[in-house]
Length: 316
Image (cartoon, rainbow, N blue to C red):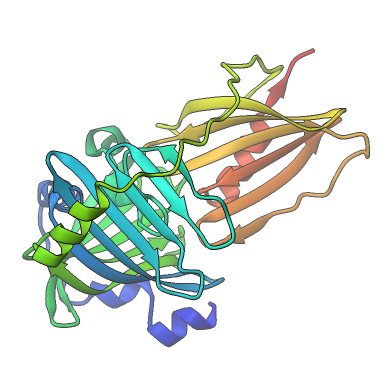
């Protein structure tokens, strides 16, 4: 494993001491309570995200003001990247670049997507397991594992604050229980007047304009994906012109927890070698079928990406 895992003792096995057996119903309830707390409480959270490439320190504030979610995320490294949410508008600010906004329900950058997952949507495809109790720092924590039922996707181990139900640590694991990424909270301030006041002021700030994408309504492709892991559905498709003679066709898929894209373009250079790449949660796998280059990009194990790419069928 990489040095960062050893230095910080970031392995999924560390939290398995002091386990207690319990019904899966307890884990189901805990998962819902965590999502409710993360999306509805007023709090400030300082945390770090770890992956094989970097370590990112972040400050995140969240509150519901006049029925509207207001959030602010600031990367506390040299980039000082800031993201602001006001309702369904997410705005990005970064030195040296024009600010812009996107439509969205929550900030996902640096936050584990599992915090916002819809339990009813993902429950058929994952086992929710109560793994007992432990301590992280001076906080008692409840431990939960979220395991893919068919081993076609990644797994999670969550440490959740026993009192507030906010996450304290989230490990993303591969099918060999090796840690790919980790989210680790350093400190949390709950229901702070300063948090409320700062976000209330932020809610009145004029945000940058929405970034408008060119309309590309449901283009027709001469290919289809033959094999998808259960629960994955197509959520969008688009085409983009790379050059006068080169167009890339993209279809996005999600199961409500993980997302990946299938990208297809033509090649006149003959067959390419498979080019697998794994960086934390992100896998990139490329293969060719005749004159078609297929690239799978997203949050999938390499073996699953290979199966999906191999299943793509083309028609004349």
